[in-house]
Length: 124
Image (tube, rainbow, N blue to C red; front, side):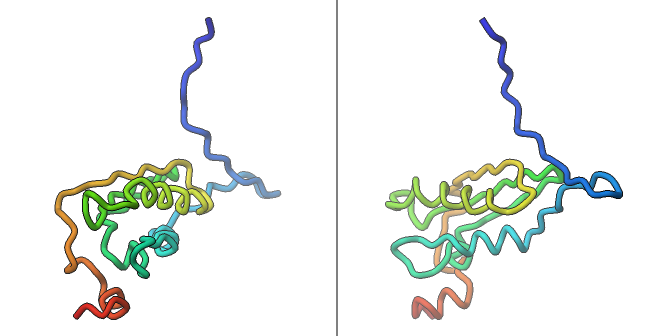
């Protein structure tokens, strides 16, 4: 019987002739840019502009945590959108792990949409 422990994958550093370099620092701008590539299939606006992203936490070791919501608890994309968020953030260099949590408090409403989203959807 083997005793296998589950650990997170190690973050690798780069090597240069001057020595090892630290992994790239993940910026909030990079995470937001990737979040803007995820669209609700029923609404032609990205989830960031829709106001579905409540929080983004980036740790020094490359772990990213996202708290998001959906427009309604019965949203047909409830399984799809969090997975797309995770996949998009994992593409950022330096990300070691991603955790996406769907939260319902506070509930989403149209006031959370950006001005651009309101213009795109003709909601003033």
